[in-house]
Image 1 (cartoon, protein in one colour):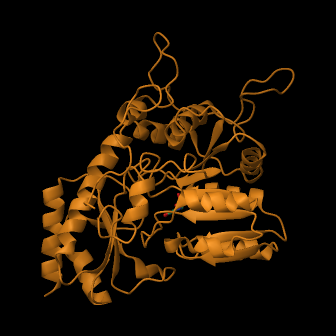
Image 2 (cartoon, helix red, strand yellow; image 1 turned 30 degrees about the vertical axis):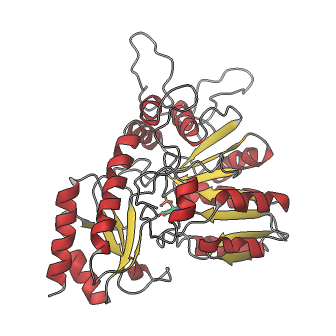
Length: 389
Ligand SMILES: Cc1ncc(COP(=O)(O)O)c(C=O)c1O
């Protein structure tokens, strides 16, 4: 197998004949109206004029907002192109979206399967679920180990590729196994973005993501979303959003929608540079544990190439010691030492500083931005040399 920036079927014309870049720039736009902007500005409203019977669509700002409607439509068009029977709900953050799925679907006595190597706030969610009498089982993402703990579960939660370890599991296989046992399946699609992977097409019931990362890509917005097939399950998520009020501000929703227009440009640039960086790191003797699903020799590549259309902008690797990793981060000039990932400005961090991930002290999570690839790679190689002393 060859290294690749793209996996299955990327670049083909999509249903309706339009390619992904075309769909990204037009996603969620309303029909043109003379003298109106292409993308209407944010609607700031806590309430809407509502004489008579309180019927929708717009009644109160915690339930619905026209700016969310357009954003939700845009995300739905990318997560589930050509599918009319799906609904997308925008949330205040990725965690709001994740919690809304878990807490709306699970009851005392139910069992849920979570990854043991997923985003670190999942362990906080786990503790909270357990206080409500929900049984939480965990399994690692790689190797489809979830299959062994599915019997009797109500919900399977998948994060693929996982953050920060970049392991991948077979969504189609796991979804079939979960459905055969009557369990629902949710996939955290944050790292891949809807241009990298479409969980609903792979059989999942929910695609859930933090829009804070590459979806919006500028490091200035907190956002989350859930896309699911119409029906009871997504209706319960909508109800949960209303109950907890975890709604995005109109400004954030509008910024997110504006950013989605450049999603394909950003992911193609960032992901291609991520692959180039991973290749450059492969040649370094001081780098171990290198992971990038687009590398042909990565343990995730075989499954990733079947179910992903792009492999993300995050590269993970380990430097020999904590001091060496800190020295490397200090020596970088084009890369901010910051958490989060997916932005147009490269960021990197020593992930072990948070204490929540099972990673070596020298483990670096590197998020590749939109800088010129040769500048970025030169900066990384120089910082590696300098930090080696
Ligand atoms: C995979 C994944 N899911 C969810 C989240 C949570 O998103 P947010 O920070 O928008 O709440 C993160 C945050 O880093 C993440 O990496």
